[in-house]
Image (cartoon, rainbow, N blue to C red; front, side):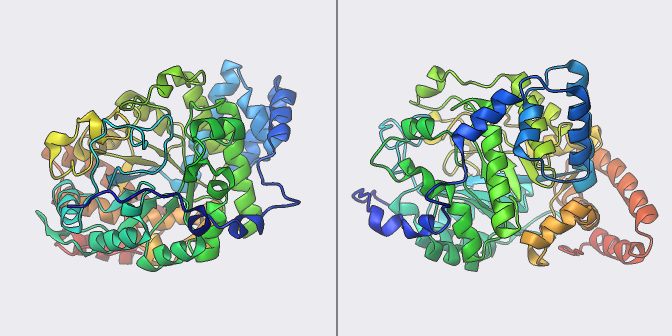
Length: 497
């Protein structure tokens, strides 16, 4: 049984100031609060023609500048808002086609040395039931995820604590990749592990890269420094704003070129946070030539013994939430956008038409709750309360009925289409072609191995349309695709372009 060690905040060994200072410009970071506030104030009354010019720029898959993003944030005219939504969907389809990537979160432990006011895992929550999964328990969870549900891609979530340090991270990821579980039509396994973890130093990140992760995901939570300092109490690692802000720089330095950023909406003004995300994307593009592979935008949700959530004056309404999704899609047009099961099913349905490219499904965030579903709704071992607990089969069926294909493709990571390579392919629209081919092959796998009858019928209809598009749009590659498709139908697995 794992026991909690003495908690010591050893900042000298964990937080390396030199790994921050090297990226500062004249001692300043890349979030100029005064400039952001000035731009938001200046563009309160946008001109309609200027808005339409901005939409045209976004449709050419060019990152918007801060003035353009501030302009879109203040659009209130219903006709212009409709045009923004329509353009956001066009941008999404131009870059990503009509695919929705699916994944599941896997929480490996809920010990934490931090004390964030909005989090059910915070250190001072004495009512939380704490546990870290052993390697055998991880295997059990993955057998359910890959062998019963049918997931191919996970986001593994680690707290900041000695029990879930870099040694545990690397061992747990290797363990996940090792699991093979017999399915109805083949063998189920996790082909790509993305990571949501605390900010690590460069040496630790190099170890993480060597394990073969997909995207390294760290959310700033809030880009507003005063709010950041308040909700992340002093004396904790997370109180160090710049250590977190520059973690993606360290990731690039360590060889991890697929990174995911995000903000927790509801901590501060949502318009400011969208601007913060844009400035973050700009910094990564300008410094490394590689913007964020994904952007996430979770909203505050109820959490066990976290009363700050009810007290926050910055809660985001549904209408503002939909608007900020549209503005992110238009401002950073190449990026993947993730909406999670924090949101309810109705909101997630609407979000698909606003430019979303990734969603989780069949999500359980209690520690060990995939293999022990009776614990899935226990508040005392969860970070927050989920809004959508539908099965993967139900979610995929709904997407198919809406005209979207669920993709389980992980080929890009294994073919080297990451970092700058994938950024260039996304901007040109070429990545969507690779992904359409692989989406069809992996969807065929999933339908045969896991789908219920109603979902399989809906999926077959989508596949017919996708295959016909491939025949028309990619005649040179179609013979090879057709060969792969037939091999998958006959039981081969993991064929990809």
